[in-house]
Image (cartoon, rainbow, N blue to C red; front, side, top):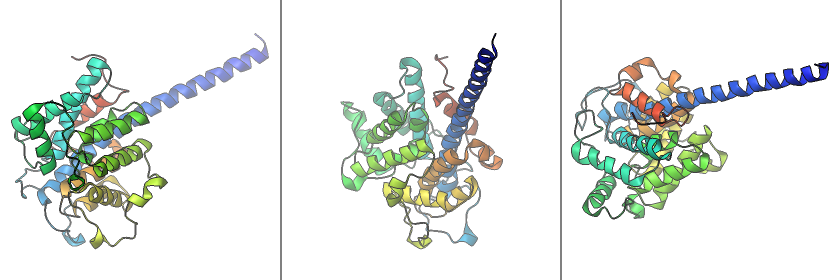
Amino acid sequence: MSVYLKAIKYSFTIWYLWHESCLSIGMILKEDAAKGLFLGLAIGDAMGSPIEFEKKRTQKNYVRSYLEGGFHKVTKGEFTDDTSMALAMADAMIESQQKNGYAFDPYKIMDNFLKWRYDGKYSPRGECFDVGVTVCGALAQYKKDRSGPFTGSRDPMSAGNGGLMRLAPALIASRTKEECLMFARETTRLTHGAEEALMYSEIFAEEIWEGRVLPKYVRYKHPLNIDRDDIMSGGYVKETYQAAWWAYQTTKNFENCIIEAINLGHDSDTTGAVAGMIAGRMYGFDAIPKWMVEGLQWSNHIIHVAKQLCPATAPLEIN
Protein backbone atom coordinates (compact mmCIF):
# COMPACT_ATOMS: atom_id res chain seq x y z
CA MET A 1 0.00 0.00 0.00
CA SER A 2 1.38 3.41 -0.96
CA VAL A 3 2.17 6.07 1.61
CA TYR A 4 -0.64 8.16 0.10
CA LEU A 5 -3.26 5.43 0.63
CA LYS A 6 -2.00 4.76 4.13
CA ALA A 7 -2.40 8.44 4.94
CA ILE A 8 -5.97 8.42 3.63
CA LYS A 9 -6.79 5.27 5.63
CA TYR A 10 -5.28 6.77 8.77
CA SER A 11 -7.19 10.04 8.32
CA PHE A 12 -10.45 8.17 7.80
CA THR A 13 -9.85 6.08 10.93
CA ILE A 14 -9.23 9.20 13.02
CA TRP A 15 -12.35 10.87 11.60
CA TYR A 16 -14.49 7.77 12.25
CA LEU A 17 -13.34 7.46 15.86
CA TRP A 18 -13.96 11.17 16.41
CA HIS A 19 -17.42 10.96 14.80
CA GLU A 20 -18.44 7.95 16.88
CA SER A 21 -17.21 9.57 20.08
CA CYS A 22 -19.26 12.68 19.30
CA LEU A 23 -22.37 10.57 18.80
CA SER A 24 -21.70 8.75 22.06
CA ILE A 25 -21.15 11.99 23.97
CA GLY A 26 -24.30 13.47 22.45
CA MET A 27 -26.32 10.47 23.61
CA ILE A 28 -24.94 10.76 27.14
CA LEU A 29 -25.72 14.47 27.25
CA LYS A 30 -29.20 13.78 25.92
CA GLU A 31 -29.97 11.30 28.69
CA ASP A 32 -28.34 13.48 31.38
CA ALA A 33 -30.37 16.48 30.25
CA ALA A 34 -33.56 14.39 30.04
CA LYS A 35 -33.21 13.12 33.60
CA GLY A 36 -32.30 16.60 34.83
CA LEU A 37 -35.27 18.14 33.04
CA PHE A 38 -37.87 15.76 34.45
CA LEU A 39 -36.38 15.55 37.95
CA GLY A 40 -36.01 19.32 38.00
CA LEU A 41 -39.74 19.68 37.37
CA ALA A 42 -40.62 17.29 40.20
CA ILE A 43 -38.09 18.69 42.69
CA GLY A 44 -39.23 22.28 42.16
CA ASP A 45 -42.85 21.16 42.47
CA ALA A 46 -42.26 19.19 45.69
CA MET A 47 -40.15 21.89 47.35
CA GLY A 48 -42.61 24.64 46.44
CA SER A 49 -45.85 22.85 47.30
CA PRO A 50 -45.75 23.30 51.12
CA ILE A 51 -45.53 27.09 50.73
CA GLU A 52 -47.97 27.47 47.84
CA PHE A 53 -50.21 30.57 48.15
CA GLU A 54 -47.86 32.21 50.66
CA LYS A 55 -46.30 35.64 50.11
CA LYS A 56 -42.71 36.22 49.05
CA ARG A 57 -40.23 35.28 51.74
CA THR A 58 -37.28 37.39 52.78
CA GLN A 59 -33.88 35.77 52.41
CA LYS A 60 -33.50 35.05 56.12
CA ASN A 61 -36.79 33.10 55.99
CA TYR A 62 -36.10 31.16 52.78
CA VAL A 63 -37.26 27.57 52.54
CA ARG A 64 -34.17 25.51 51.67
CA SER A 65 -35.35 21.91 52.10
CA TYR A 66 -38.34 19.62 51.67
CA LEU A 67 -41.11 20.47 54.13
CA GLU A 68 -44.50 19.01 54.98
CA GLY A 69 -47.85 20.66 55.56
CA GLY A 70 -49.08 23.77 53.81
CA PHE A 71 -52.46 24.29 52.16
CA HIS A 72 -52.54 20.78 50.70
CA LYS A 73 -51.00 19.09 53.76
CA VAL A 74 -48.28 17.46 51.69
CA THR A 75 -45.74 15.04 53.11
CA LYS A 76 -42.01 15.67 52.65
CA GLY A 77 -40.97 15.29 49.03
CA GLU A 78 -44.54 14.92 47.76
CA PHE A 79 -45.27 16.49 44.39
CA THR A 80 -48.56 17.91 43.11
CA ASP A 81 -50.46 18.27 39.83
CA ASP A 82 -47.46 19.61 37.90
CA THR A 83 -45.56 16.33 38.17
CA SER A 84 -48.61 14.07 38.20
CA MET A 85 -49.82 15.46 34.87
CA ALA A 86 -46.30 15.20 33.45
CA LEU A 87 -46.15 11.52 34.46
CA ALA A 88 -49.59 10.91 32.94
CA MET A 89 -48.45 12.50 29.70
CA ALA A 90 -45.15 10.61 29.78
CA ASP A 91 -46.95 7.28 30.16
CA ALA A 92 -49.07 8.03 27.09
CA MET A 93 -46.11 9.23 25.03
CA ILE A 94 -43.97 6.19 25.88
CA GLU A 95 -46.78 3.83 24.90
CA SER A 96 -47.45 5.70 21.65
CA GLN A 97 -43.76 5.87 20.84
CA GLN A 98 -43.31 2.15 21.34
CA LYS A 99 -46.47 1.10 19.48
CA ASN A 100 -46.48 3.56 16.61
CA GLY A 101 -43.01 5.08 16.51
CA TYR A 102 -44.55 8.50 17.18
CA ALA A 103 -44.96 9.91 20.67
CA PHE A 104 -48.01 12.16 20.36
CA ASP A 105 -51.50 10.70 20.75
CA PRO A 106 -53.78 13.42 22.18
CA TYR A 107 -56.60 11.01 23.07
CA LYS A 108 -54.26 8.75 25.03
CA ILE A 109 -52.83 11.72 26.93
CA MET A 110 -56.29 13.00 27.82
CA ASP A 111 -57.40 9.52 28.89
CA ASN A 112 -54.41 9.41 31.25
CA PHE A 113 -55.26 12.86 32.57
CA LEU A 114 -58.73 11.51 33.43
CA LYS A 115 -57.15 8.58 35.30
CA TRP A 116 -55.23 11.11 37.37
CA ARG A 117 -58.17 13.48 37.85
CA TYR A 118 -60.82 10.94 38.81
CA ASP A 119 -58.87 7.85 39.99
CA GLY A 120 -55.82 9.41 41.62
CA LYS A 121 -53.32 7.63 39.37
CA TYR A 122 -49.86 9.24 39.10
CA SER A 123 -50.24 10.83 42.55
CA PRO A 124 -48.15 9.63 45.53
CA ARG A 125 -51.17 9.83 47.83
CA GLY A 126 -53.46 8.03 45.38
CA GLU A 127 -55.81 10.94 44.93
CA CYS A 128 -55.94 14.04 42.79
CA PHE A 129 -55.42 17.42 44.45
CA ASP A 130 -54.30 20.95 43.56
CA VAL A 131 -56.14 21.06 40.21
CA GLY A 132 -56.26 24.34 38.29
CA VAL A 133 -59.60 25.76 37.19
CA THR A 134 -58.74 25.71 33.48
CA VAL A 135 -57.51 22.10 33.62
CA CYS A 136 -60.56 21.08 35.62
CA GLY A 137 -62.92 22.56 33.03
CA ALA A 138 -61.10 21.01 30.08
CA LEU A 139 -61.06 17.52 31.59
CA ALA A 140 -64.71 17.73 32.59
CA GLN A 141 -65.61 18.68 29.02
CA TYR A 142 -63.57 15.81 27.56
CA LYS A 143 -65.08 13.32 29.98
CA LYS A 144 -68.58 14.52 29.08
CA ASP A 145 -68.56 14.10 25.29
CA ARG A 146 -65.10 12.89 24.12
CA SER A 147 -65.80 14.51 20.77
CA GLY A 148 -62.22 15.77 20.59
CA PRO A 149 -59.18 15.99 22.86
CA PHE A 150 -58.49 19.73 22.54
CA THR A 151 -60.94 21.07 25.08
CA GLY A 152 -58.87 23.90 26.55
CA SER A 153 -60.53 27.30 26.81
CA ARG A 154 -59.45 29.92 24.26
CA ASP A 155 -60.43 32.78 26.52
CA PRO A 156 -57.38 35.10 26.87
CA MET A 157 -58.11 35.29 30.61
CA SER A 158 -57.54 31.54 30.87
CA ALA A 159 -53.87 31.75 29.86
CA GLY A 160 -52.66 29.90 32.94
CA ASN A 161 -49.43 27.98 33.51
CA GLY A 162 -51.01 24.51 33.51
CA GLY A 163 -49.68 23.61 30.06
CA LEU A 164 -46.19 25.01 30.61
CA MET A 165 -45.69 23.28 33.96
CA ARG A 166 -45.91 19.73 32.56
CA LEU A 167 -43.86 20.10 29.36
CA ALA A 168 -40.88 17.91 30.34
CA PRO A 169 -42.02 14.66 28.65
CA ALA A 170 -43.02 16.45 25.44
CA LEU A 171 -39.58 18.06 25.20
CA ILE A 172 -37.67 14.88 26.04
CA ALA A 173 -39.57 12.71 23.54
CA SER A 174 -38.93 15.09 20.63
CA ARG A 175 -36.61 13.96 17.84
CA THR A 176 -36.28 17.29 16.04
CA LYS A 177 -36.64 20.95 16.93
CA GLU A 178 -39.78 21.22 14.81
CA GLU A 179 -41.31 18.25 16.62
CA CYS A 180 -40.33 19.78 19.96
CA LEU A 181 -42.20 23.01 19.22
CA MET A 182 -45.21 21.11 17.89
CA PHE A 183 -45.37 18.80 20.93
CA ALA A 184 -45.13 21.80 23.25
CA ARG A 185 -47.95 23.67 21.55
CA GLU A 186 -50.27 20.71 21.05
CA THR A 187 -49.88 19.17 24.52
CA THR A 188 -50.60 22.61 25.97
CA ARG A 189 -53.65 23.05 23.70
CA LEU A 190 -55.24 19.94 25.23
CA THR A 191 -56.24 21.98 28.28
CA HIS A 192 -55.16 25.57 27.52
CA GLY A 193 -56.29 27.01 24.20
CA ALA A 194 -55.48 30.68 24.87
CA GLU A 195 -52.92 31.95 22.37
CA GLU A 196 -50.67 33.42 25.08
CA ALA A 197 -50.42 30.03 26.82
CA LEU A 198 -49.50 28.37 23.51
CA MET A 199 -46.94 31.04 22.67
CA TYR A 200 -45.07 30.76 25.95
CA SER A 201 -44.98 26.97 25.70
CA GLU A 202 -43.41 27.23 22.25
CA ILE A 203 -40.88 29.84 23.35
CA PHE A 204 -39.94 27.76 26.37
CA ALA A 205 -39.61 24.62 24.25
CA GLU A 206 -37.26 26.27 21.75
CA GLU A 207 -34.96 27.58 24.47
CA ILE A 208 -34.91 24.24 26.26
CA TRP A 209 -34.15 22.48 22.96
CA GLU A 210 -31.30 24.92 22.22
CA GLY A 211 -30.06 24.82 25.81
CA ARG A 212 -29.60 28.58 26.09
CA VAL A 213 -31.34 31.92 26.36
CA LEU A 214 -32.20 32.99 22.82
CA PRO A 215 -31.68 36.72 22.11
CA LYS A 216 -34.95 36.95 20.19
CA TYR A 217 -36.87 36.02 23.34
CA VAL A 218 -35.10 38.31 25.81
CA ARG A 219 -37.96 40.80 25.52
CA TYR A 220 -40.29 38.26 27.13
CA LYS A 221 -38.13 38.01 30.27
CA HIS A 222 -37.55 40.25 33.26
CA PRO A 223 -34.48 42.49 33.15
CA LEU A 224 -31.91 40.91 35.48
CA ASN A 225 -31.74 44.04 37.61
CA ILE A 226 -35.48 44.04 38.35
CA ASP A 227 -36.42 44.61 41.96
CA ARG A 228 -37.39 41.23 43.42
CA ASP A 229 -40.50 42.79 44.94
CA ASP A 230 -41.74 43.59 41.45
CA ILE A 231 -41.67 39.97 40.27
CA MET A 232 -45.09 38.38 40.00
CA SER A 233 -45.36 34.61 40.55
CA GLY A 234 -49.03 33.83 40.23
CA GLY A 235 -50.86 31.34 38.04
CA TYR A 236 -50.67 33.16 34.69
CA VAL A 237 -48.25 31.67 32.20
CA LYS A 238 -46.38 34.94 31.58
CA GLU A 239 -45.68 35.41 35.29
CA THR A 240 -44.44 31.85 35.71
CA TYR A 241 -42.22 31.97 32.63
CA GLN A 242 -40.64 35.26 33.69
CA ALA A 243 -40.17 34.31 37.35
CA ALA A 244 -38.63 30.93 36.50
CA TRP A 245 -36.13 32.36 34.02
CA TRP A 246 -35.22 35.13 36.47
CA ALA A 247 -34.46 32.52 39.13
CA TYR A 248 -32.21 30.63 36.71
CA GLN A 249 -30.41 33.67 35.31
CA THR A 250 -29.62 35.20 38.71
CA THR A 251 -28.18 32.04 40.29
CA LYS A 252 -25.18 29.83 39.58
CA ASN A 253 -26.36 26.26 40.26
CA PHE A 254 -29.40 23.98 40.32
CA GLU A 255 -30.01 24.14 44.07
CA ASN A 256 -29.98 27.93 44.32
CA CYS A 257 -32.20 28.27 41.27
CA ILE A 258 -34.91 26.15 42.91
CA ILE A 259 -34.57 28.00 46.22
CA GLU A 260 -34.92 31.41 44.57
CA ALA A 261 -37.90 30.27 42.50
CA ILE A 262 -40.02 28.75 45.26
CA ASN A 263 -39.44 31.61 47.68
CA LEU A 264 -41.08 34.04 45.28
CA GLY A 265 -44.28 32.64 46.81
CA HIS A 266 -47.84 32.47 45.48
CA ASP A 267 -47.85 29.69 42.82
CA SER A 268 -44.56 28.48 44.27
CA ASP A 269 -44.84 24.85 43.20
CA THR A 270 -45.28 25.71 39.53
CA THR A 271 -42.65 28.45 39.54
CA GLY A 272 -40.34 25.87 41.11
CA ALA A 273 -41.32 23.23 38.57
CA VAL A 274 -40.63 25.45 35.55
CA ALA A 275 -37.39 26.80 37.03
CA GLY A 276 -36.44 23.20 37.79
CA MET A 277 -36.95 22.19 34.16
CA ILE A 278 -34.67 25.02 33.05
CA ALA A 279 -31.95 24.31 35.61
CA GLY A 280 -32.20 20.55 35.14
CA ARG A 281 -31.77 20.92 31.39
CA MET A 282 -28.91 23.43 31.61
CA TYR A 283 -26.90 21.88 34.46
CA GLY A 284 -27.87 18.24 33.91
CA PHE A 285 -28.77 15.39 36.25
CA ASP A 286 -25.29 15.03 37.70
CA ALA A 287 -25.40 18.62 39.00
CA ILE A 288 -28.50 17.99 41.14
CA PRO A 289 -27.56 17.60 44.83
CA LYS A 290 -27.99 14.09 46.17
CA TRP A 291 -30.31 15.18 48.98
CA MET A 292 -32.73 16.69 46.47
CA VAL A 293 -32.95 13.45 44.50
CA GLU A 294 -33.19 11.14 47.50
CA GLY A 295 -35.75 13.31 49.28
CA LEU A 296 -38.14 13.38 46.32
CA GLN A 297 -40.93 10.82 46.36
CA TRP A 298 -40.90 8.51 43.30
CA SER A 299 -37.48 9.82 42.22
CA ASN A 300 -36.30 6.46 40.85
CA HIS A 301 -39.50 6.08 38.86
CA ILE A 302 -39.16 9.56 37.39
CA ILE A 303 -35.57 8.83 36.33
CA HIS A 304 -36.72 5.61 34.69
CA VAL A 305 -39.53 7.40 32.85
CA ALA A 306 -37.16 10.11 31.60
CA LYS A 307 -34.79 7.48 30.20
CA GLN A 308 -37.67 5.67 28.46
CA LEU A 309 -38.87 8.91 26.88
CA CYS A 310 -35.47 9.80 25.47
CA PRO A 311 -35.42 8.70 21.78
CA ALA A 312 -31.78 7.64 22.09
CA THR A 313 -32.52 5.17 24.87
CA ALA A 314 -36.17 4.21 24.36
CA PRO A 315 -36.79 0.44 24.07
CA LEU A 316 -38.11 -0.81 20.76
CA GLU A 317 -40.93 -2.92 22.16
CA ILE A 318 -43.38 -2.85 25.03
CA ASN A 319 -42.51 -5.39 27.70
